[in-house]
Amino acid sequence: MDLTTTYLGLSLRSPLVVGAAAPLSEELDTLKHLEDAGAAAVVMHSVFEEQIQRDVLELHHHLEYGTQSFAEPSPTSQNRRSSTSAQNIIWSIFGKPKKP
Image (cartoon, rainbow, N blue to C red; front, side, top):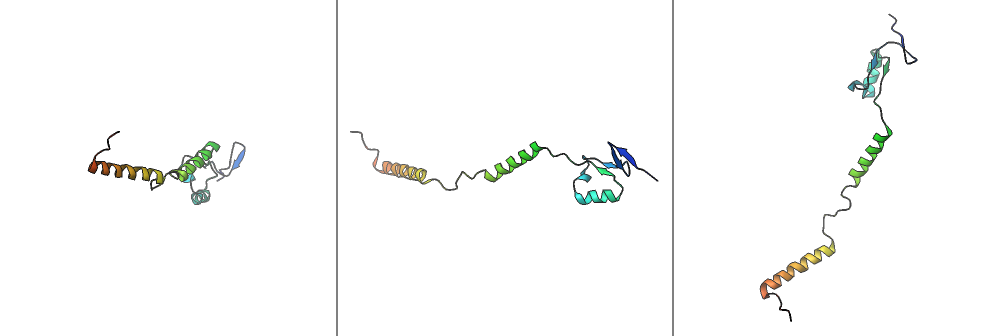
């Protein structure tokens, strides 16, 4: 039986076209099986430049997130905290110094 047809100027051997919304069009091996089963064409998922740019920016964000923070405190903040706590200990023992 001859099922050849023309679609948008393309000559197809059958009217069977796999749509982009179908999960069948996601993997290359599946597409080859569909072709062997008689699919004449496949409508692929669209990829727009904006999607690619967004994906690149999202990857950059996740790779760089948290690289400006450190697990240990900086030396200046550590000295400030230790001197303040030492001062509080001394004041608790001897009392605050009186102003002249």
